[in-house]
Structure formats: structure tokens, C-alpha cells
Image 1: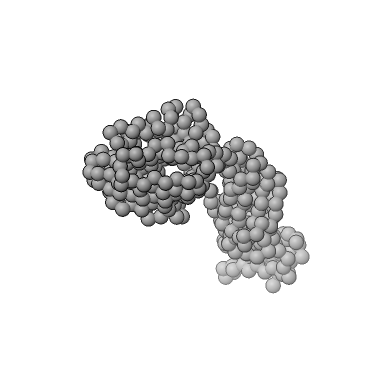
Image 2: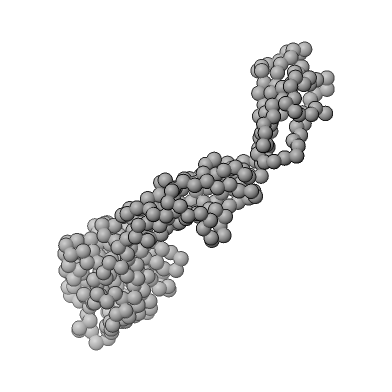
Length: 359
């Protein structure tokens, strides 16, 4: 492709703006990954998946549950609410699941919970009323189990299940028969935890893995790419919190197939067809964990760039000045036309045509 410059001598010229089609690429960042002291944990319900941090304390799980007067006393109980969280004993490193059902002042209730994916290391560390209330059911043969609770007005119920080990995918299928009107999963600081609101209908999956996946992001350059122009995809900001990135896999057209796999975070790619492109990067860490990020990138069908420079900022009647028009084809073209609309009585005199034809 060539660049042509045309110089013209004119008596006066109108500054005729050229509008170029520009496109924008919008970077979509994946959800940030929370750092853990040991492991990476999530809670999932339906389409909702949230990274969580176990509440941590130096006491054993049973001591933190503090079973007194047939109910828990953690300070995290809520009336008519199912409160769940992971608890990590900072002394032993053991992680356990807490289920707290209602609290003081609540109405009577009943709940049945079917368990699957129970790790072989896990057992009922706390069975709230499990040995004194004949109405309750406590069954556990990993990887499955079942618990049925029944509590009276003003009372509460619950359990502790653990230790869960370093890697697990524990599924809870609850049936909230009565007494529970909300479900929450707590995360973070034990003195002021954040909460994830869950619904009363769907199963709840709690996952844990000893390896944190990569945190993935990438940028594109130029900001407004056009057809046949090399686009640089830079994933230098991608990193792994507890290891290193070993592979970058790129899907440039959104078809679900990875077009290029490298160990270098920077690659280039060009597009022959204009339009919106979905670009996905999959990063793999040294332990095999993966994470993805996607951008929506629009490619312009702009074929020619035209710029104009003028030798003066003002012109008097009868004066002359120089105008240089630079035409830059962005693709192979048979010919390029440029039309100037001048007022009556104005004239253009070609000085240098650089191969262009004046008509």
C-alpha cells in the first residue's frame, strides 16, 4: 500500500471535515480473586458464584460454636435466618462448615439438608441437640449424608461439619420446611464478616482448593483498530497469586477455539473482516488452574485515512496558500477519490499530484 500527497495552490478553500468510523474495544475484567492464607474457596448457587474467605479463629470449631442451652452462641446467629460460613482454626489449619439455624426469639422451625461430596475426613464436630432430640436425624457416610433439624419457639439449631481438608466440593440440598425466611453465607473478618445472600430454593455448593487460580486481564492497542491492522494483545498484567503463569491461550474470534497458545503474554493479530469480535484469554498457572478474561473488540471497516494541512490560518480575498492532502490507504484499493466542494468563484490549482488525477 502507498501513501499519496497532493499539493494544491488555491485562492481560498473551505475546511471540509472528514468523519472517520472509529470503534472502541471495551475491556471486561473478571471478578477479582480474594487472597487466602491457605486455599481458595467459593460458594455457588445457580448462576451465582462468589469467592469467599473462611472466618478464622484460634479456638477449635466446637469451642467457637459454644453449644450452650441447646443452641449455638457464636454471636453470628440471626432470628429466622440460616447463617452459614467456613471456619478455619488458625492453630491447626482445619477448615469446617458451620450451619446456624435461627436464633433466640425466633419462631419454631424445621429443616432437612441432604449432603453430597462430603470429604472422607469430615464428621459432625457439633450435633446441636443431636443426642437429646428424638425428632432429629443425623446420618453421615461420606460422600453422602442427611440431617433433619426441629427446634421450638425461641430456640435455634445447627451443626459443624469438618475438617473438610484442602480440596472439596460439598453440595447442600436444603428443604426449609418452617422457621427460616432468609439464607446467608458469611465471609471475611470474623468480627465484621461480609455476607452473600442466597435463595431458599436452589442447592448450595461450597468449593475449596489449595491452589488459587490466576488473576487475568489484558489490554489492546491501538484503541481503534481497523481491518488488516495488527492489534497487540498485552496480558502482562495477568499474574498468579501463589505461583506463575505457564500458558496464555487466545481465542480471537469468540468461536470457543483457541487460535494461539504461547508462553509470552504479548501477541499480535489482525482481522480481515470488520465487525464486533469477542476475544478471550485463558491463563494457566504452574499448578494447572485456569482463569479467563474476555473483551468485546470492534473492528472498523475504514479503508482510507485522509489528513489535510494548510499553510495559513487566514486568507484574504485574492490571496493564495498551500494545502497538502495526505491519503493513506489501509487496504489494497483500485483507486481513491477525493471531492472538494468549493464556493462559486473559488479555484484550485494543482502543484504536485503524486500520481493522483484531477478531474
